[in-house]
Image (cartoon, rainbow, N blue to C red; front, side, top):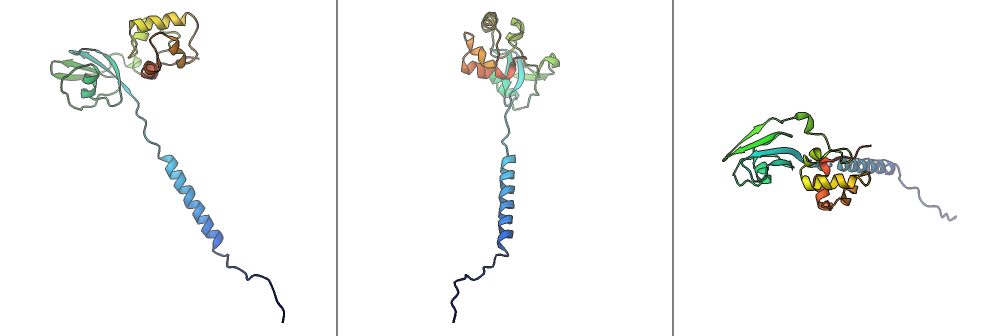
Length: 172
């Protein structure tokens, strides 16, 4: 009688295939999850004019007649009619109309604080005459190498910079 300490052979035929199937399913699940990127809300420019306390150009994430009127300080109850990017909302009494952009070329161009004059800077929502002057005065001490450099300007902090950032770009 002889004793053998060998182990009995295991059935491994299905094991590699099941591992491959698991890895393929895991990869597919990770790929599917990575492609599900939530949409980014980009503000759109809408100009509001007429019978409003604060006429001007506003960056609205949900540009409707109602949100445009609220942004300009109006208490007029308007509906949720969408306003296309760059269009003008004219409010007269309790009525509002949507007009085509006054100058479509300028609607989407960012302003470079290193080369813009006071008029161009004041066209940016959130920059008034005093801030435009302060930007020009600070620029005289040296160019802005990034938009973060605008924090050197009196009156522009982190909050104000976040509001005006979508409308500005520092050139090369």
